[in-house]
Length: 124
Image (spheres, one colour):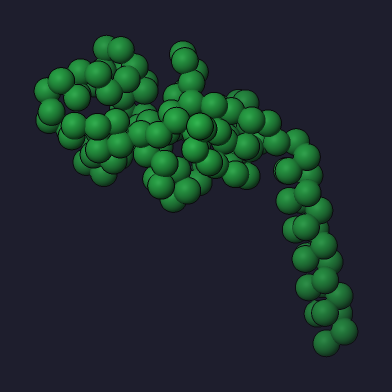
């Protein structure tokens, strides 16, 4: 029983140390929470929602277009920042900010262009 407690404490300390390291290595990224379909030119010529909003086929706002493309076209939530597009690892957190300009604090996994979200909030 003592060994089980020690193992549990060790795992808990490792988890805390890991989250502290992630917070220390975190950087700040700015952009729009978009969908991979529009942001990566799958069905958009401008890397934006512009064409889809004109046609009104996928909603009338950036948020509606983003949610539609994720739900019906198999897209993922991404951070679109000028010409860069980063996948967001926490799709549930990203969904709450669909179509909005945000500030994401997180750690970049550069080989996959994925941001591990520590914090996401509106960019005012």
